[in-house]
Length: 382
Image (cartoon, rainbow, N blue to C red; front, side):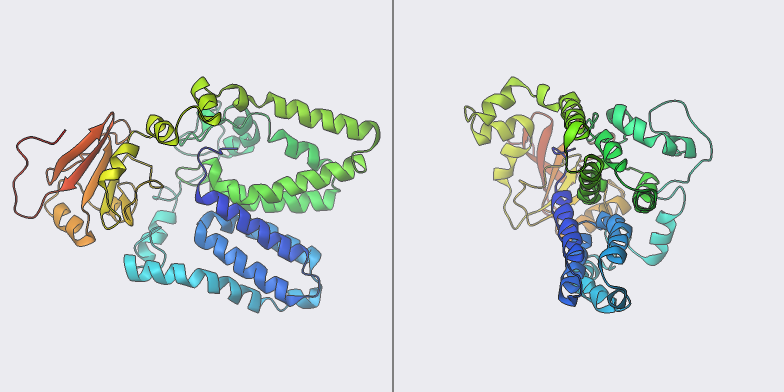
């Protein structure tokens, strides 16, 4: 699901899964609980949305760990902080606040977390008929979420990460194999993750990626219980249902012939990357010591610069491009280049007049911050 969009979400999901595995196998061994705490802290440091898995991990902890051990979890929490503290310290030293880039201060965090703030929007207790995401999420739309995500995912998301197809329905099949109590606990853990995510200003399904492995195990175990180890007619029916749902997922039939040639090795890696990423050939003009401002561009992975900032993220989002203090702030940050995707940057007034064109390719253009006091180039290089 959303395989083409996930990045740090992959590592986060692996760390959450590893933490769950350590809890499940801990028994009376506190060392495994400490390792689970460290892994979960590392997951949150990798991507903050790992915190959505905390209710599920706590429920697993209550079921798998003896009660006398559950009462002594401060050391486990401390191990989680061991993994988190380097990230928090780095944010404090480099960005001026330990919760950066989510907010530059406590007051800004409170403001952005309020309904209608930068992070989330308020819930409207009315229903809407259209599958598209509304400016204010509603209770009716939240209750209809499984249907919309399954059948209208690409239209529903404000940040379309792809098509989910019928695969979420496997979760419903697996849920049948659990008793009411455990199913209720699963729903509590799921709601504790999905509801805060739904209230985000720009929710995207890959933010839930860290909890997907836990749901997958729940569904698989439920199917195993339901069919008594996939035995008999019920097991064959479950296998057929899974195969039918998987075949209904159309991604494998939508791949372009070009992708097939790339997979067969008939197209070089460089050619393939350049065909999908307009800015990719421009990265050869960027050095590791450079610092790059991204406007619309998203290919941070291949950019060799050690530091980069996106215009939609703090601290650039707090600045006004073209304002008198903008150039000074860029120089304080040490910005040397700006890469602009004209097809994705929207109406953003970038690049500012302080930049000279270095090279361009299709909708991607690379600019260099002009030395202080110099004039604009008479003619940009090809």
